[in-house]
Image 1 (spheres, rainbow, N blue to C red):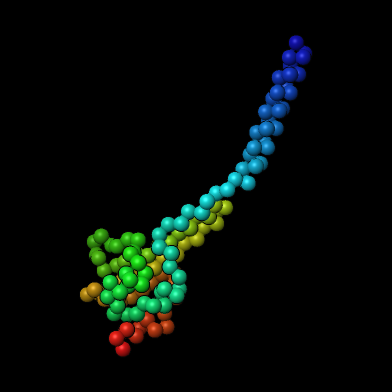
Image 2: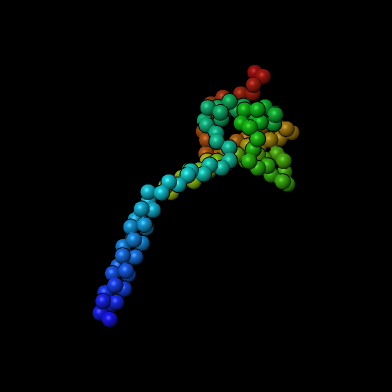
Length: 121
């Protein structure tokens, strides 16, 4: 009977050690980065000018992630990166149009130096 108890204890210790070693190795598991949205760089934003048409903006930046359903004069560009190691990164850009022309930009990017100079000047 004592041998049976020792065998159970040994099996339990072995299983416990195995579980601990498996959970300790979970930090070695590769986790992929998950990007979502439009990746924009400041060099792309620097091409924006006031009075650009929607088509011109779309040519420079691509399609927006979301357009306002109730007012089609607001475009949202958003980028999020969920890092596999827990480091997250987010940037957004909101463009406002009036009569089909760009009038304002807000968000996490610097406003271009020449933003207030229309292209046709």
